Image (cartoon, rainbow, N blue to C red):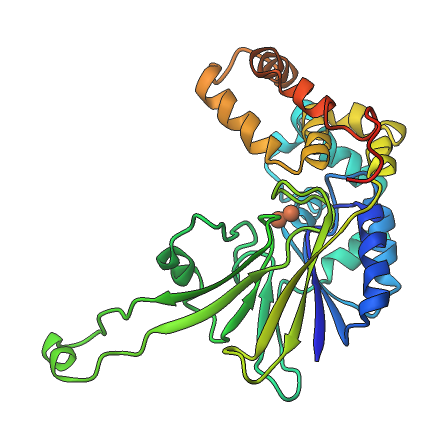
Length: 319
Ligand SMILES: [Fe+2]
Ligand SMILES: [Fe+2]
C-alpha cells in the first residue's frame, strides 16, 4: 500500500499541477491532502475545483477556517479592517458559495485503517487544534505532550510547511494513586509515535522552493508499519507570482499579500520575520500597517533580498 500525502497547497494551482504530474508516475493507491487548500497564492478557486474532481481524501486546515469564520460571522471585528485583512476579503470575494459549502463539510481529523498494516492518524495541526505544528527544534517532550490523545503510532500533520519525520517518545509519567504502588509495581511503558509532515505543496518554508509532498509505503518490518519518503518537484513559479498582480490580490491584500508573495519567492518565513522585527523595533501603535512594512524594508533591505531571488525579475526559469 502506497499513500501520497499532500498539504498546504495554499491556492497554488501550478505547484499542485506539478505534484499531480509526479503522482501520475508514482501511481499511489490513495492520495490524502492534510489541509490549508486555500489562501496565500491567488488561485484558491482553481485549487478547490481541481480537488473536487479527484477521488482524493481531503482534510481541512486553519486557512479554511479563516474563510469559514469570516463568512459565518464568527471572526473578530478586527478582521473587517481592509488594511490588515484585505487578503482574506479578496479570497472571500473570489470563492463561490458552492466552494464554501464544500470547505464547510470537510473533516478535520481522520484515522485510516488500510488492510495489512498499522492505522495512520492525520490532522492539520494536532487533534482539536489547527494551528499547532512540529518544528525540528521542538523537544520530544513538547511533541509527546501534544500527541497524548493520539493512540495510533504514526501521526501525520502539516501547518509548518517544513518536511519532518521523527520518532518521539514520552517519558513515563507518575501514575495517579498511592506513590507506594508506583514504587513497588512495574514502570509504565513509554509511549512512542512517529510524527510526519509531508511539507508544503504550494508555499514551502524550508528554504527549498520546490513543491513538496510525501509517499508513505506500508512495510510490516518497520516500526509503526510505514516507510516515509519525502519528495520535491521543481516547477515554474512565474505564473503563480504573476497572478498576484493580474488577479488584483496584491493590490487588495496590501502588506499580507506582499509578504505571501515574498514567501513564494524565498521559501523563507517572511511573515514571522516581519512581525518579529516590528515587535522589536516599532511602537505598538502610531504607524499604519503599510508604513510598518515600509519601515521594515528601509531598515533591513529585505525587499531587495527578495527581488534578487524573484524568478519573474531574474533569468532563472525553474529553481
Ligand atoms: Fe499552511
Ligand atoms: Fe496551517
